[in-house]
Length: 211
Image (cartoon, rainbow, N blue to C red; front, side, top):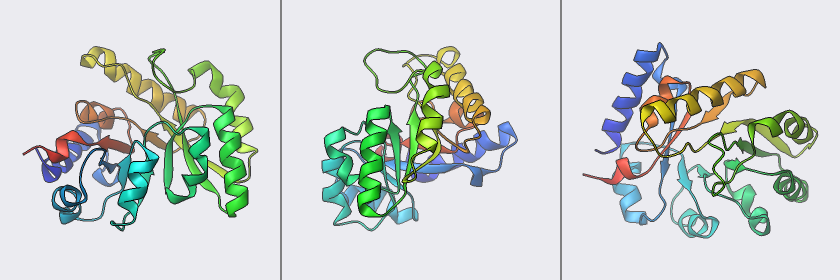
């Protein structure tokens, strides 16, 4: 498909939903891709946030590519010290991780931007807090001076539109309820549904790199 086609599909989904295309940012997920592929398939078309699932892979690429880097995968507490290298961490999934990030932010003298990952599909193999944990967790996070919670993130179960779309709709409802502007949702197979349901960040990888 390629990046221009993905951008056009995002724009079309925005029009269907009565939204403006500039309300949605494409995060180009570069997991498993070489620096050369990223330059050719992503950066040749402009400046986009680059998303990585693993800290170590991101660090290697950061030295070679000037970009706004996002961490979109699970962050282990023992790697929290690398969080200041990222413009946004999409995957804050526990109070313990938040406490580790707060210490890192304090030591570095920075305020770390994060999204809270919500496991709306209640899948035991996936990370993320449960919806019912948000009323207790979010006030705790907002008390941490070195964390800035910008929004919510989710990874829906794999399935048809009837399964996936309600998950996206629910994340938007929760973000509205808690006054959070960012909604990170949607990947290569479902980003158009996510945009129609209010995504502000879509994490697309595979669709950018296939011809």
